[in-house]
Length: 341
Image 1 (cartoon, rainbow, N blue to C red):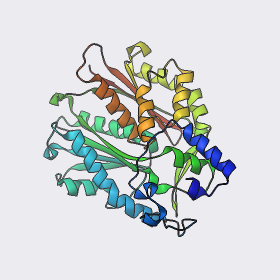
Image 2 (cartoon, rainbow, N blue to C red):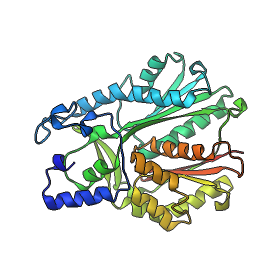
Image 3 (cartoon, rainbow, N blue to C red):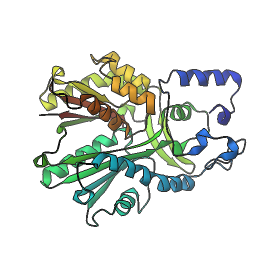
């Protein structure tokens, strides 16, 4: 980033400080360029100012080539030893970093040789909370069809949309976001597969924050607006959201055993810890995912959920109720509660 931005030493020190304070140690990208010398770059021109800077067409070409193979890895890991691919009745693809027609859903159907009459739909451009929206759709499908086996896959290639300008939003996006994919299987309760039950959903929109988090298309890629004011908005509104979601589910704070909060950034997690009784220990899974992967947009909360499920394993010492929440453009706040009952 220091090379690309061509900053002076004072600005470089500021950039290094920001990266050190991010609580992120590693991130991943489908672009090899970020780990190579300029002469070996495959996506960016090896010129001093990256010109001609990649346009939207080139970014979508790379998305089309990379999103489906990455999605398949997540899907195979998800359904292995649970269901046969031929049993899948619904496919929901989730992404805000690429789109085309035919798109990711049809690529997956073809590459996996899924049923040609599979029900498929896509959740696009909803940002970091979109996995929960996909979960809500899957829940509705299962309630409507006792034989439903719904595959949801969230795939984001955020690093395709790097912008070289040194605006605060551009630097924040370049600092936070990485690439990743995650899949989940949602089935009708009657199948009795091992897993947790979708107990409740609750969401709120705070339009007073709509200008502080947005995602817009441009000729040079997708442009992220991520104001430093977002953590303050979440700090102000999250406590009410939390208790409204619990009330909607007929539960109390004491019923919650685990917290699955989207790690949008270090300050967002700190804001939640500051304004609620939720502690850093409660959010250890979120902090761990942020450290190891950064913010991958929609798959991120599923990475956190997997950390929680792996920690629970086969333990049955206590009742499991997982409260999850994620945030995105709007400002939209989505929540869910998973239970072992």
